Amino acid sequence: MNLEKRCAEIGREFDFFLHQGSCDGENEQFYDVWITADDIDRIPHKLIDFTLKHFGKSHIRDVLGDTEQELYNQLILDDSTESIVTNKPVFFIDKDFNAYPNHTTPSPLWCLGNLKIQAASVCSAKVIIRIIYFINTAER
Image 1 (spheres, helix red, strand yellow):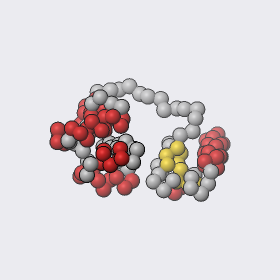
Image 2: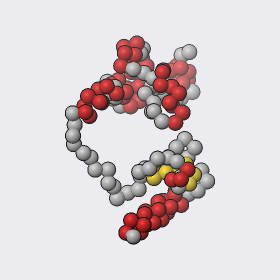
Image 3: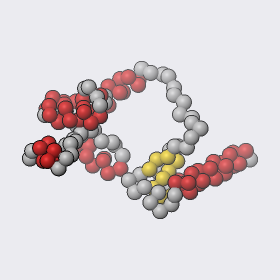
Image 4: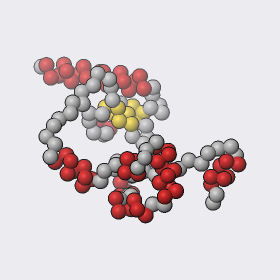
């Protein structure tokens, strides 16, 4: 396909990267074609080189991360805790641009609004209102 040459002819650089994907939403249907540790040796070197350049990494495992088994082996032995308390709001935005507070499940009950329809400030205001409601309810 000569994509590098064709991009250069129009004054652009060809850019390519591969990644693992995530396990939420529509990506669940791709579980059976995810890149596994066994697949890494079968990825063409040129595609790995493009991917490393794109992400600014030196090894493909730095891009793909650890396997679930490797993560499990690390975490099962780790009894430390991590504080996720922050003084800044954190939101989960789904593929349809619905915004949810990041401390709940993305369900209609918790939907703060849609960023294509409402401003982010409206969604932020809804978080503050809900926090005040829950604080007042807890104090009773």
